[in-house]
Amino acid sequence: MNALKHIRKNVFAVTQAEFAAVAGVTQATVSRWENGVAPSLEEMQAIRSAAAERAIDWSDALFFDVPAAETAA
Image 1: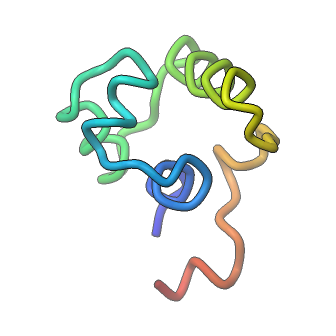
Image 2: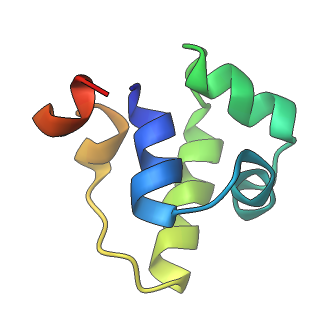
């Protein structure tokens, strides 16, 4: 599982469409992220801001590191 898919599924616990709305992008963009296209700096900032607005425990390391238990999934 890549980092963005981990963030969507395990941190925000939402569908691609819901995550798209959170990040201000299309569902197709979220799909591209989950298939290896990196989000822009502005998109990463939008995700970070959305986490803060939802009081989600956040670390920017989530953009780069998937917890070991998730890499086997």
